[in-house]
Amino acid sequence: MKSLTVASAYIPCTNAVKSGVNLLYQFKVELSDIDREVYETLEFRLAQHPSEAAPYLLSRTLAYVLNYKQGLEFSPAGLSDPDASALQLLNLNGLAELLIEIGNPSARKLHKLMKSVKQVLVYTYKNPELLVEEIKNNKVHRAEEIKIYAFDPKFLTELENSLVKNNRWAVVHQQGHLDISVGENSISTDISTHTL
Image (cartoon, rainbow, N blue to C red; front, side, top):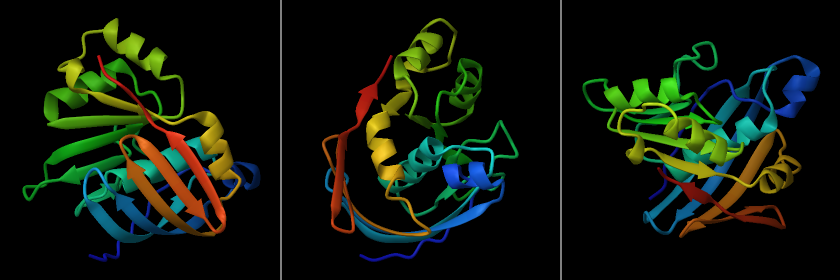
């Protein structure tokens, strides 16, 4: 099944940081998520905010791709609302069923989210052990249900080096292993999973 998804959100990238302007990136992703049996062609564009860095951009993009389902969207508030999650999936009543955070959100924020939403995921490009430790040292509602996924910084750096204005990726995800084909190059990594 093929689908066309158009999303617009402020996301980071080093080019924007250097130039001080918003940049728009186009993505066409051939997704084969074998574990979830999701096979889609995703087409979307992302505007990046000048104050952010590439690891955030790439983590957010990958979180969208790896959790893709109808209705998943980037936060309409973009980066202007620090309380908003990076990605959200709303039900028919407009209530959030899934929220996805990027980086290492505070234990306070996670506590608030877990009190109001069925599922919260975190995709980080930072040290996940620091986040796990912070959650353990604070009272976070339903902390044991939070799933934390971490990308290897070397993998993100390699992927950043292939980032262009119009991106075409073939993404294969199976049992925590990620393969991304960009042109003739293939970039691979294992996504580490952390729970409390």
